[in-house]
Amino acid sequence: MSTTQLPLNIVLCLSLIFRCSFAVSPFGNIIPRFPSPLIHPENSQQPSLSNDQSSNNGLYESRYFTQTLDHFSFRPESYQTFQQRYLINSTFWGGPRRNAPIFVYTGNEGNIEWFAQNTGFMFETAPRFNALLVFIEHRYYGKSIPFGGNKEVASSNASTLGYLSSTQALADYAMLITDLKKNLTAEHSPVVVFGGSYGGMLAAWFRLKYPHIAVGALSSSSPILNFLNITSPYSFNDIITQDFRSESENCYEVIKRSWQKIDDTAKQQGGLEMLRKSFRLCKNSMDAGNLKGWLETALVYTAMTDYPTPSNFLNPLPAYPVKQMCKVIDDPSKGDDDFAKLYGAANIYYNYSGGVSCFDLMDDSDPHGLGGWAWQACTEMILPTEGNRETSIFPAQKYDYNDTVAYCAPRFDVVPRPTWIPTEFGGHNIRRTLKRFGGNIIFFNGLRDPWSVAEKGAHHVDLRYSTSEDPEWLQDVRKKEIEIISGWISQYYLDLTKSFT
Image 1: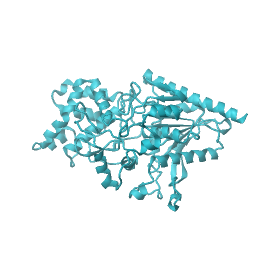
Image 2: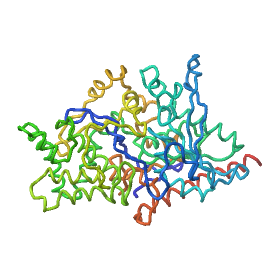
Image 3: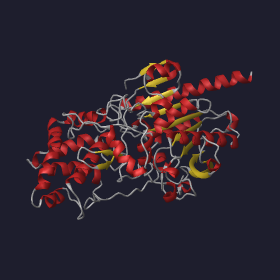
Image 4: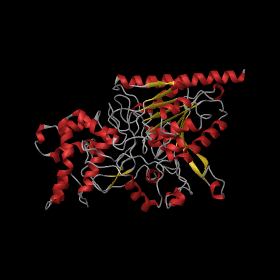
């Protein structure tokens, strides 16, 4: 892992990219970006949990906090409340008398149980620190829905969705943590926040905005700089291209030329039926754009989750799935049949477990309640990633911010604010800013992750459960993170002792 040690214990491996839940594809249609509709909870080595039944097996229990709807105004409607879910595990906690630490996960854009089940690092680290574990669900996701828990009402228009923002979410976390510590008589217990991807952004911003509540933050794969005029909109797909090209030049060439082949085939008499059979698609409506978007999604998410061990974060995947995709594409037994090669590669992402008989391109199900991200991606989380150079594995496309505006305006009747997040949390000249202002934040990003930059890692790989197959570099990353967190907590206890003497 290549890191830069800065003053105030800032570890910056800044890689700065995050995929929106939609993007204007070079194929001329809107396709989902993150998360995919075809995702399942992590099944790792831990119990599979759902539907708030977690208290039955002891991994965590679900609780609810009465949360304020609007923290930033004093209009009568601002005082409305909703029930915010959080998960808690006190198995290893040393208790308030010992001022034992509290580890808090700042929830992402989805069901909090999904993220808890994929954050084994916290469960495995808690015994070492005698830490209490808390996972807080983000407002408007999972079961933390305002307006009486009615998702249809909460997402009905811009007036009700207007309370869905990162700043409101951070204030939620601050209120919940403060109240929880008070109820546990644990006012002097240090809090460390954790998060991956968007949750990692929130963890870093929480430390910056509420340093009196959290002593430090571990921010994994958090694209805090992936905003207009800070990071290139071509970087994301550049990294995906390099991921596949580094495995095989032929793999890169086959994928790159496939898009035009699909278009050409679709225009032929009976071409769509030929494509349907080649890719084992279900018998419903489709066009070339749907198919290409489906294939692009597989390539994007496989690059993001190119973990060194088998995983089931987005879909069941083998270790190093990019390598496995390229092995299929390079298989000489498939001859010159590019569609057979692409089908084999897509099958690794969508059907590695072998249980799918046909693929439904029209499936827009949302099993983890992730739909709110479209609103965030149309208001403040304007994360440009859709640019493709001539050398890209995807068709060349110039990034145009106006495409985002054209998509968002009719859908939500809002105009995006692309510069708001860098204004609110910082972004320009971030290294200099953090030297003078921020501290006790670990940023981890893996170079094979399109959101990049530890030397070999994929999307928030450091937060996953450890396995006996973890490479040495990943073991070293986690050891370093534990060492840094231990230092924060030790310094806190020293400062606390001094304040009492």
